[in-house]
Length: 82
Image 1 (tube, one colour):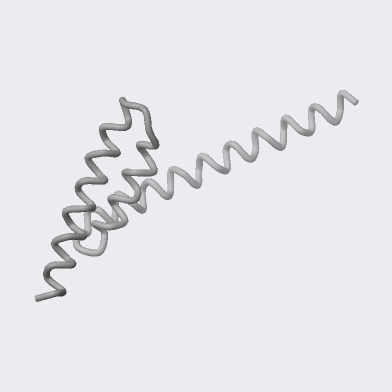
Image 2: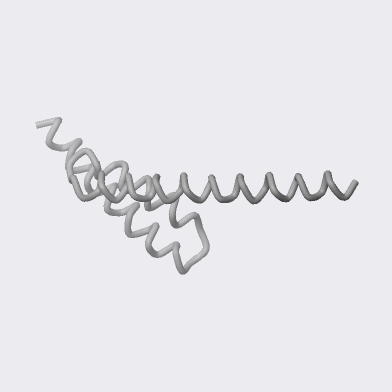
């Protein structure tokens, strides 16, 4: 019984975070982080949530690689100017 209650609570909290994150995409707040937290909670019970979370992680990694490359090019240009 206690396991069932914890599962239901996790699902409710996950959907609440997911909805709050979606709202934060147009309102002030950390929307994508909140969406990721909601999906992380839901991923244990729903395969679609695991897939969506993996996709967010993949896009985030690619974004970091792009930002890192931009930053390195910028640093190289500034050191050449000196």
